[in-house]
Image 1 (tube, rainbow, N blue to C red):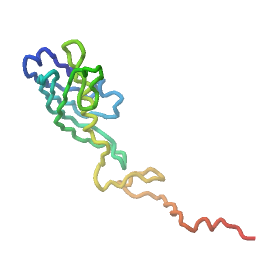
Image 2 (cartoon, helix red, strand yellow):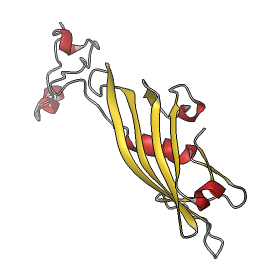
Image 3 (cartoon, rainbow, N blue to C red):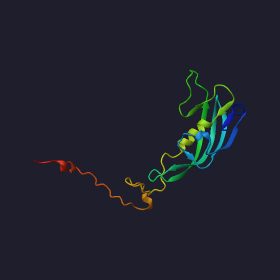
Image 4 (cartoon, one colour):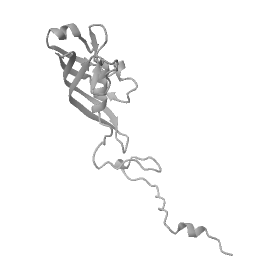
Length: 169
């Protein structure tokens, strides 16, 4: 899954259209929950000594509202350009975040890591269930979108509160 044959890419453009299920192991330990399969539509071309992979990644991710913690689905629909290049002549690896390393030997290019990284970068960091979300009560934890709570807010400390504790003889 998500593998390209480099010998085929050398002969011409190669298309890759796959669906990655939401429960695929590539999503383990990411903190992102997919609600739909990831639609991968990529084309690969040989460019110089490297391989340029272009296309789109589409899915929906479920996250928690940052104020009330209700689940929110967000769409990821992103055009990607991934460049895979051989290691540098001085032996230094190509790994600057924009260029991915080509395997030193073999004809198999695994796109799993690069695709995973691109989806994680495009997933929103924070989401809201709605713009006017009131969040949770900091005292009792009640969802304030469903009504107000009976908690009495603590009085904000004033600049003269320290004088209340001064004892005179």
